[in-house]
Image 1 (cartoon, rainbow, N blue to C red):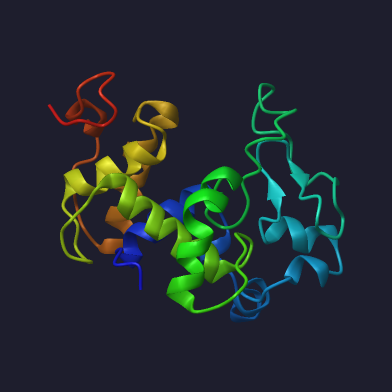
Image 2: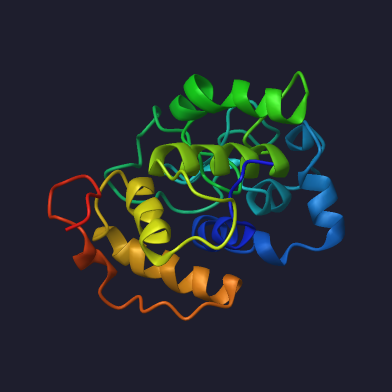
Length: 199
């Protein structure tokens, strides 16, 4: 639907939202319904559905259990971050979602309401985002190593060295796409400080 390899989407989700790829059918149905965050019966359900901001560790303000803690803040620097407000299985930032992707997801899915906490909305929006930001122009499946790694680099904001991110995404892609790309030195493919430009 977004012309993005499912295996690459899984590679990112496995890193961004551990546990989502092992949700039961019942959980998928629950978290794929609009407004689930108003129908939860426990804080644990909100936390499992990524209805909290990883920057602060707190449940979103428009949810049941608002302001309660799911996890510790991402870091001490982000503990008071009220701007980023990432949410959902792809942890997409509020600014990017509102400005660039909410409307595109509505058009793709032909619906009037979307939210990053709804599983399909989050996945479609993230796939659109990654494809656009990576400037990939090829087919929808079987991306080459450079395409995979550039997409990972772009998602970090331009530097593969953050948390060894490109290496992790490359290995995850190998797992889900049944590939055997060499991921060990993928950060060396880029010109330092070039915002993901290849050598």
